[in-house]
Length: 166
Image (cartoon, rainbow, N blue to C red):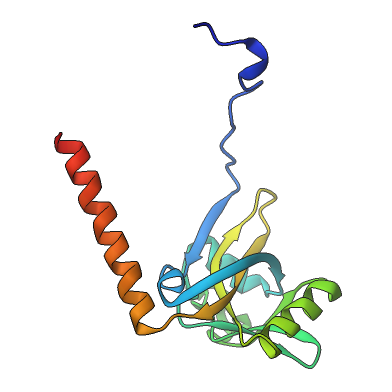
């Protein structure tokens, strides 16, 4: 049966040369139920951006917090940039996150009333080459939930092996 022209995509997807994942918190989806996520900007110094271009950062131990009407990334690691010399940056300083007032109030409500946590999921350069951070509004998993997640993952792996063999 021939495919109709209007059902086919107009153009092939272009891969964007500027988009690059810097750091990913892979453990977050194991430890938390991520309800929703949000893309936010981050305030950085020049040496931090240079260091991020080389891919030297870690957000696995970090979290986001609403304090005094502002959103902050706490304990995010960005390696020092050697060529910056004395004009470098602190590795684990608090970094301000940029978000609209409406989103900030929604985040503050989720954390305060519903007992949620703000977890950084991925840090990346967007299509314009600007550093962005995707944070998830999440609820912590209990040990039994983690076991169920692990069992489901193991079953999916086993199923893929069986399908590949058969």
